Amino acid sequence: MPQPAEAEGVPAELVGPLERGLSVLRAIASGPEVRHRPGDLARTTGLARSTVDRVATTLVRLGVLRAEGRDLLLAPRAAELGNAYLSSCGLPGLLGPHAAALADALDESVSLAVPDRDGVRFLTQSTRHRAMAISFRPGGLLPAERCAPGALFAAHWDAGDHERWRARRAEDPLDTAFPSVPPRPTAPPDEVEAEFLDRVRKARESGVAVDDQLIEPGLLSVALPVRAPDGSVVCAVSVVSHTSRHTAGSLTERALPPLRSAVAAMESALSALSTRGAAPGAAAGATSGTSPGEAPGVMPSAAGAPPGVAPGAMPPAAPGASPGPGPAPEITPAPAGAGLKEELGSGFLQSLARGLDVLRAFGGVRGPVRLSELARLTGLPRATARRSLITLRHLGYVREEPGGFVVLPRVLELGYARLSGLSLPEIATPHLVALVLRVHESASVAVLDGDDIRYVARVAGTRIMHIDITVGTRLPAYATSMGRVLLGDLAEADRAERLGRITPEALTPHTVTTHEGLDEVVAATAARGYGWVEQELEEGLRSLAVAVTDGSGRAVAAVNVALHAGRATPEESLAALLPPLRETAGLISADLAAVARFSRVATG
Image: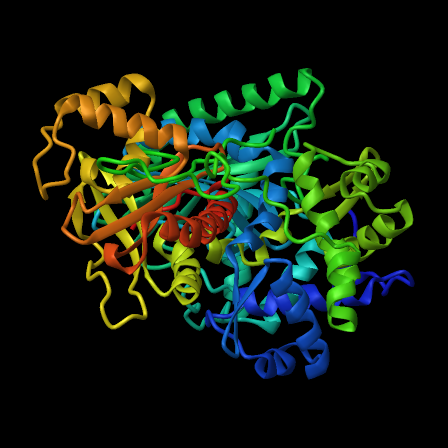
């Protein structure tokens, strides 16, 4: 096994700004606090305050961090760094469906995990909806000695791996560096090691590992390794339950036969992929040898899309307006080229931006990637890409193999676990705040819920008289701009079925109340690319909406601006509000696509 970065000397070609930038990003991602002040980050990282300020400025402009006053927070698009690993290794898309089928068959949670140094990094989990929920966030890290997959992976450790594990245990006996687990009860180190090595021996002999409340009281799991065609362990699959439903013995007895069948199916999938020339799980982890997955996407409420309509007279097209927001754009944070450097000067760390470009580029290729290909994908000179790779290898984020470079699961420590738990309201609200400050009117996000829309995020306007609607409010979709956007995005047959069962009521004298009229305005909304409702829901209320889309371009929500109709003419409202509204929808869609690519995002 290659020596880890920590054991190597500092390379002469190390890119200092990239190393320091990732140090700041790790500090923000790893601590329990969500908000961080630059001064605190300087103390945590040991960097000069001026250096932290330049790093923060760069990461904010790249969309990796978000600034709220003096606080710095992870931004959703930082998930792209973890997505690069998940896409490159291909395991979520290839093996995730088998894990989900196993979870359905057993009615228990099932997870996939890979080795990450002397820890276990979770990739995906198919959970059960119970009051006593069991869930590990994708990207979460556990100590190897406190979970079933850890014993399976440690069965392949060499002497150096064991020494590094002992050194970590000596430095952090209570596991405080692992926020996903509660602190370990104090126990003699020799006892902890003996117990772990005994479980490793049993796992090596039987090929099965059991966790009997090692992570925390009440939690049980049984795990098996998943092997590549060359016999190397690519990942482990675990069935997770609770002592209220099983003992360790009964869970093993119940789960092991279907678990073995699921592993066989997973290994067949890896073998089939290998025969097609791909390198299965190349970047899975330390015990692997050397297919971008489909995004699970947004949870509940599939719905609409582009946009609105008006009662009576159609509003004029906005000057220079395009037909609609369309699919979420491919997420590429601000370019690392001369534009931002020229704008910000020494405040922008171009070599940090370029290094992150190299890291993200791994997501465009499955398996090992050669330097020339990474240079092509990023548009960087080979020498620049090479220096970034040297730095990333030194920090433990990539490994060099005969076929090229592979990105490693350690990349997931750069905020992925926290970001994978974001909900749609959490993603959307900062953008709604910015929109309201810009247009001074109320803004909301809603999803289609049956024949209604349900508000999931809301920011009130800054005017004395503003629209007063709260999160959770339900309104009939047919009479709202967001509802018509979402109805308009449905497949033609689904739209016809949905509209056919709705009986429109006259909420105001302006409400469209015939099925023919409703069909027409929803079709016009879809064709036009925005929703417009003029006093149909309530006298004096005007609303303009566009779609929020996922990575595939499907509308999963809508965002609107609502205002009093007497404030401006329809033409003036459309010209003033549609461009910033579309811009906001694009930003929310881009953030949502980044977070939802390999994680399910709750609509709230």
